[in-house]
Amino acid sequence: MAKRSFLIPGVDKRLLIKDSIKAMPDFTRRRFIAGGASLGALTLLTGCDVIDSSSAETMLAKVSKFNDAVQAWMFNPDALAPTFPESAITKPFPFNAYYDLDDAPDVDGADWKLEVRGLVDNKKSWTLDELYQLPQVTQITRHICVEGWSAIGSWTGTPLRDFLKLIGADTRAKYVWFQCADKDGYNSPLDMRSALHPQTQMTFKYANEILPRAYGFPMKIRVPTKLGFKNPKYVVSMEVTNEYKGGYWEDQGYNSFSGS
Amino acid sequence: MSSLTVTDAQVRTTPAKAIQPAWVRVMHWINALAMILMIMSGWQIYNASPLFNFSFSRDITLGGWLGGALLWHFAAMWLLMINGFAYLITGLATGRFRKKLLPITPAGVIHDVRAALTFKLGHDDLTVYNYVQRLLYAGIIVAGILIVLSGLSIWKPVQLYYLVMLFGDYPTARYVHFFCMAAICAFLVIHVALALLVPKSLRAMIIGR
Image (cartoon, rainbow over the protein chains, first blue to last red):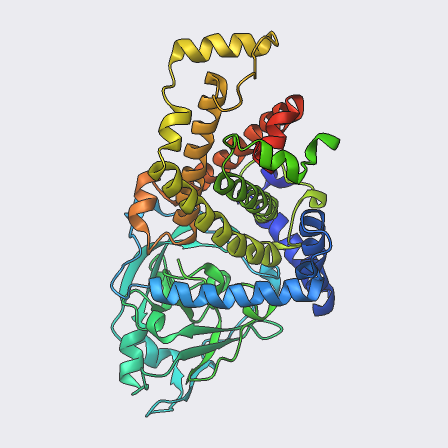
């Protein structure tokens, strides 16, 4: 396999796979799940209509919802993700997305504003300069991808819970829903308890430098208690809401809670 | 396979103790199903970010893509964990593990491995496990426990941090999870081959005697 020839093991192959999956319409993707279902289970449970592809899908979706509840129950708001010394940082930290770096959003920091919507007292939009004035902290934590690989990075920014307090967010609401500048409109819901976790951060810097385009300029949400796809980059708006609005990957079948 | 059929008369006239009690048989086959689902979906998950320079053919994986495989993996895990936990509790409480699997002595294992390789290992009394069986069955229980613990570690590396510590760190737990899978697959090959060589052991696992 060509994998070994890349600087960052596996990245390009994953992109390739993702691109090809992405190229398929939703219907095909769902058929893939169903196809897998019949392959494995038909041989084992012949004649059992649990394995009828659409009911297998329904059953799996139900279990995934149940797993959301189990993970919310397991979630300890005081449990911190392990932190590491600077020497442990993965270099280079991988760029990972469903598109090439060349296609990553190229946001003009001067024009960009963070929109705030939903159940908050102050719905004013924030410029980058205004956000940079907020107190910042640095964390060196492990980013874990849904694919299994992981990398340790250094992120600096404002704890999201401090910002939510500042804008008078209703923290009894269920979700903070992020929308991003990625092509095709990336978005992802974050449950409020994870949003209020002390390590959940509005990130403006990587390795003490202004967040580069590859890692989500101008702002990423770093959630070390969640898998990577729940750490949105190129964030353009956040909405405090009780409504489950779905997410780019969540809607395709990744478990919605996906907590670490 | 006519030997598989048992008439009511036979059942009544031979009240002999079952070689494999009902709870062992039920849990064995639930476990077999759960393991196969876990392994096949696990291979598809592995393919998303291979640890080694190979991937599993899509023909033998479950789920179609990473998202589908994860749904299967995190559904079948409940079957595996609940059944496995019940098996461990029952095995310990009934004394079955102690009676069937112990002792395991190096001399006994060497003797029986040698006998097995020269096809001289007898299976006259299926209620008594030879040393090769004892070692393999005890080993597969350990592998089963380790694969669940390492799996929980990589599923919940923050909430179950103490489990991750047991393996060192998150990437190591991933490797442990992989090698446990490899050990279980190796066991499966031997286990199925031997069951086919000694069909009455397969029969005992289906109908009890």
